[in-house]
Length: 463
Image (cartoon, rainbow, N blue to C red; front, side):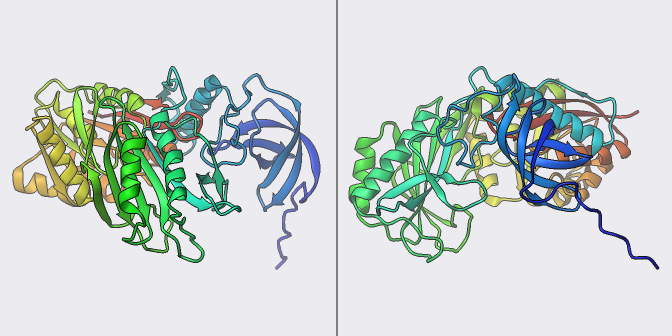
């Protein structure tokens, strides 16, 4: 039997080539093809011709570095962030905002067509922001040590754990941004050491800030490598008197060797355990570890679209299968007869119940558990039959057992909120096979300057 010959890539490492970019990957890299062989090149834009250095080749694709642009696209712009090309926080600041919105729509359309196999589904233009800067209401910033021994605060360099020191992050709200720099200087003054992840020594791991624009409240979370926080009393006083709008100062203890930011124990050092924010007419209590959307302006746009697709008239029973702290559930409860929310994280369900009480919304119930187990139990034990099921799963999409459960419940409509077009498309394919029709998909730009895109999808049961 003849041995198959390995396919030789048409380019080799360190080759310098000239090529035109034809497309973008899901993580924003330009795609140039050489005799059909794709090279993925960061910062390339379709329509541009460039000199590319090949830095790595695999059997079916390779990676390159953009050396010089020969022909430039009208979609290119100068990134306003001075550390954009070092920092790993944003990926597409070099594209105009109109181009970013078109790219995100295409990303969703391609996934729905290629992965979902759905040829005739309308994917609307992405709903963007009037001002796509300074939108993030939460900053999670690692703390490190500079070569001169002073503290630095910034995001990790692309594909590394090297912290790029920064003065400001222009996608963070200024009310979150400035306190990080102030705390870095305060901790430096008291000689509080940054955590060293290699040696597992030092105190301050991260500074996390959360700002609620609608109530003007700021929460500061100091994530430490153990319970000790040197000069705690002085630091608290400096924060209280040196940073505006502080309503809560919290210490979170994480003494594990891990990349996960938060540990299990949280202590209120000063002020309240919660700050409060509103989305539309609904008020939310937000703790240090609560999941809460980082772009509240666009969250309102996203939830309004979910509400529109649910077509609630006041007599419907709705199930929210990944309810978190109750954000979508409480929105839906304003228009539905009753909403049932299920979530696997007990702390989130406690927050959801608190938020329902806070808003005096009594036509909701929340349960802890896996949706694929709780939903059939609701049906069997209480005769609950949903007219609408809403899902907002993590990036991995819906569990297949949950999809089967949804299909067996036969709701009239399914509203699928997704943060990952690929897993959305995969799940739509299964729901279509199970008797549902995908009516339309609406991308919403929750994270300008990055490759991430959220979608709301409307599905109807076929008669």
